[in-house]
Length: 221
Image (cartoon, rainbow, N blue to C red; front, top):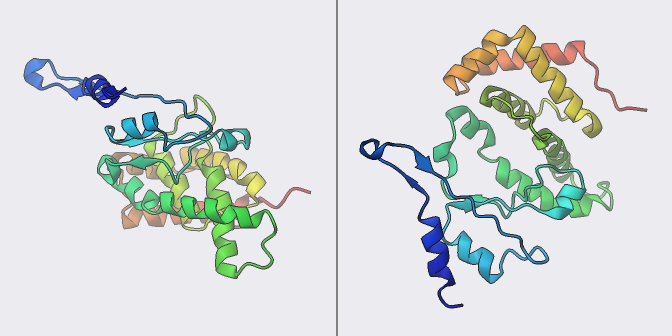
């Protein structure tokens, strides 16, 4: 019907932030749309996308492939962007979305083997596989922002590149556990500052090197 845009707008404009004079608080609207055959360009999805501040596009193929949350990074958009991120997260995740979208486009070639690809492309594919594992998150397992920054920093700086893909989740769990127990001051400083100062980067570099020196992550036989 011709008034669908108006109806959607009227529903979504209920989302608001109240002034302190009116009691404060906010109301966030999260419209959920089931696409038909994964078509995000259909009338209803595009109608709502044009109104909202961004969208998270979940893909069933990724879900069944074990990538959970099954977010398609190429079609998911935030129009709020880095303004809503703390400085540390902005630094480690600045190019992550684009890198993962590029990896998805290259992954189609990887299924036929990587021997014919140049070294740079092979490295990009391997890094994408590693970061895909890093970004997986079990249900009901939230992480403090300091731990998110720490593990994304380790991945984006190449400290996990030499870890077999099937053991990346194990590396992540053990590394974060080591940070909690042996480097709690560093983690606390990162949690408080929410930024990657030179001192914190130096501490994280030392931590990951010492961790890898005492833990082996060779490929499983």
